[in-house]
Image 1 (cartoon, rainbow, N blue to C red):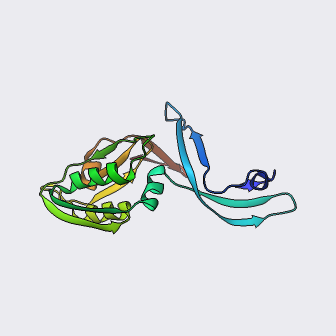
Image 2 (image 1 turned 60 degrees about the vertical axis):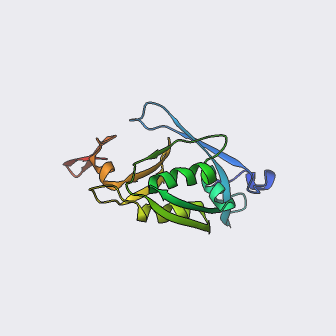
Image 3 (image 1 turned 30 degrees about the vertical axis):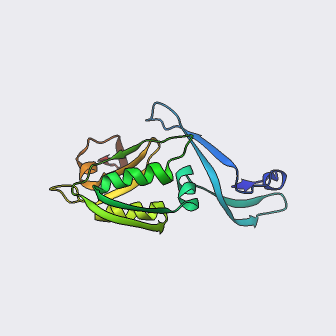
Length: 178
């Protein structure tokens, strides 16, 4: 942020603030609004007599929950995907927002213990252990603007593209799909 009005001096940022960002894209019908708590402020530099720059590090509410809670539970005889659902609902899900979790089911029953660990780290561990049937597992846990996801790369590759982008460069047209 380049601050030429003294915002950081007039309105001290202590870490309890929530930043709301709203943006639109020409190809997207509705605007997207994201609210995130401030996690850190760093790289504060005086650019000139009236302007200061700094970086606001903002994260999801679920990430803040992961920083303040530890997963400490034994899971016995469950599919990894069911363990991920429980970790998300018990330790990460924000009580107000209640963002949905979409899960690609895994197979097999497993036994794992979360030994007082960061819930996101435990989900990352579980992603490496999950088996997706006859296909390569390669699970990943991520958040998009609508929900959290525990998905396999193979299933993501097989779905229809969400958007089509056209890249043009020096009279060369290439059509890309995402």
